[in-house]
Amino acid sequence: MKNNEWHSRIGFFIVVLMMSVTWSALTNAANSVREESQAVVVLRGLPTLDSKHSIAIVEMDPESDNFGNIIVEFEQPDIKEPLHHLYYSPSGRLYAAGLDPECSFAEIGLARDASGKPVVTKIDCIDTKGQMVGEDIMWHSVNGKDYMFVTFMGGTGGPDGGSIGVFDPQTNAVIKIIEARKSEVGEGKPFIMYPHGISAYGDRMIVSSTIHPDLATGVGNSITVIDLNKFEAIETIVVEAAKPVGFPSSPVEVIFIRPSMVPGVKPAVLVNTMFGFETWRIPYNEADKTFGTPVVLYDGVKSGTGVPLEFYGNDSELFISHALPGVVKRYDLAKLPDLVPSGPDIKAEAGAHHMIFFTSKSGRKLVAVQNNLLNLGNAADNDPTDIDFIAGVNAHSVTVHDLETGEKLGTVNFREKYNKGIDNIEGLFSSGFVHHH
Image 1 (cartoon, rainbow, N blue to C red):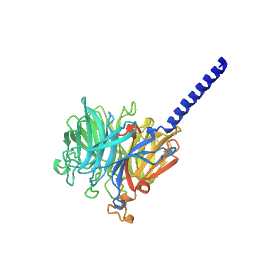
Image 2 (cartoon, rainbow, N blue to C red; image 1 turned 180 degrees about the horizontal axis):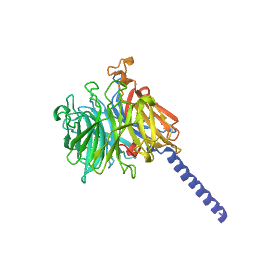
Image 3 (cartoon, rainbow, N blue to C red; image 1 turned 30 degrees about the vertical axis):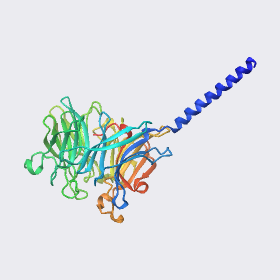
């Protein structure tokens, strides 16, 4: 064989080999999974549809062929009420507050299998020492020691129950139960009742007084200040003006605006009142650790919205979800604690609640909004869990929107697709947002 023929054949084989390697790389890239656009969700079984509570991983990118599909699902242990809110610890461990007295706080096993695929491996219920109906979770350092705090709306029981569990963030053991029953502390003394929202700055923690877990016994109208040096309630502040639906204001989520969130900011507490339809601001004087007079920043009655729920944020905006009519308002992060609009409303669906932020396959910035308050049923479906008001703020969906314009790009209705409601949404492996609490 002549040298030039040999060189030609060698060259041909090299080209073929390179094409094969390139094609293989392209194929692998096409088949790779973008975990950034996947969400961990809490799914609630609906009694009339014979479905089970579970934790699932779902694709949320409307540009994906798998949009709305469950990738992994893990059924909850056989307890009556579902898990509720998902939270990641600073070290990446996944936790969930729960509605059932038998499992009001749990750690979720979230890992990768041998192929690298994300999987849910377990749901371990944590001993709360009798505290019931977990809501919000927060990690905070006090005097150089790290703690995990959990609000329990039912506390250790009773018509004016409610507690904050102080846990060891490594072992999950209860260190202390913070309680201050209104019926026991005395007239005019600070109390803790039906706590839900929680936030902290330095050695001061704020919790809200929302509603008794049975949704009938009582409704709160205040927030309580806790001294974290002593783990004691030191002040209760009323945040209530008009009563548009005839109930007390029911403060739900709170956020302590602080320098770590907005450099140079004057610290203040923002409070959403679920039945007051308002967002309040309470100034904080860092020098003497006192709180000023609460003022209404946003009036939902005047603005045509109701049931404000969550505070979320990215690196430039603060987002507040309003269950009625189902909208997310957005504000300039740098202008906090004032609420200065920063863009168009995100028009979701009834029950707009939790949210995550991510990018699409093409690089488009997106927000996914979970549209449900409590996923209870309604009388039209002969559902025994019906509470008319709550059934009206449950779309049982997640809507995905262009973050810049608010345009709705896709909807997943979990009731129609999976016979389940969706109670919470979180980014997979702690992606999704910057500020919460």
